[in-house]
Length: 250
Image: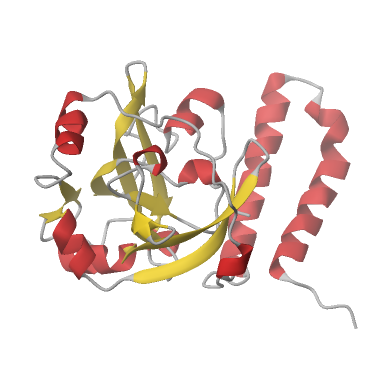
């Protein structure tokens, strides 16, 4: 009997959709946008239907990549960030607010003292490359539990220190991925502090999505009911400016 895996089913549904709509993709920009948005919705709903709490594969140290490249912004130019970097993030704190009962600021030492998780996972970049690295951090669920989200909260918006021109970088995930056991705010990489090029002092690891969702240089978490009033309303910098999918599930 053939075993049907979650990824296999998602891939099969995706290939079927592609095979049935290839002709329409060339029809018009409007048709293309409609079809791609339909594919995103199909992928999101399928992941939520099948194995919404499933873990991605974790690897051994022998599998780790000898070189884990950086991309995107590797050194924020923000003055406040530069001051934090210069003093070793001693006065830095993660702000958590929005639809929460108990907004708080979490200094780096406090995050390091909270329950931690270490995992060796594969990072898949939308550019087509992959690398395996070891990440250590605090589960995002532990931070959320400390601030008590309000019932209306549905998304976690990550506001970052870097920007492209005048557009600040941000990303967002829903509560299913925020509470997934492998989703963390990583402050360590490959048994050392998180390097600046990889997002110091903390970055998001949301292992079931493509790399552009793993926001670096995270400064603030904002819990919201809707993404419509954030940026241009599509849930992230690349989503707003380059048409990337908000849900980048793999």
